[in-house]
Length: 93
Image (cartoon, rainbow, N blue to C red; front, side, top):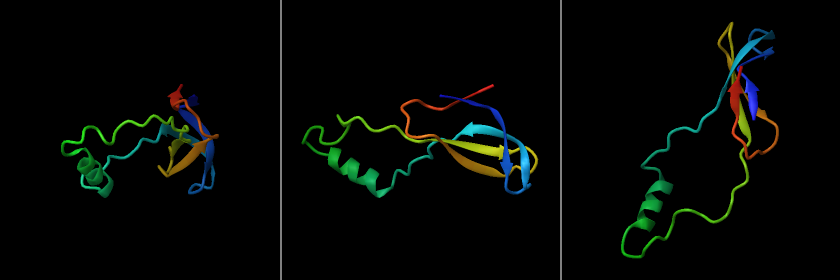
């Protein structure tokens, strides 16, 4: 799915329509000491073979999120694009 690199939308801080730069929102870095990661490591530990890992169920697509940054005041706002999609969002000229 293509999305323009620059788009003219309303900025709540400037209170006018200004040009915004668009970039795709990426997932943050996961914590190694998080409870889920520790639990997963405990499951894989020992002589039981592979207990947890890849699932056979195909997940539903994520809703694509775009970060719009105002070029005047640098205020950032998030915008979700459409419904759930299998395709990744790409910013194009």
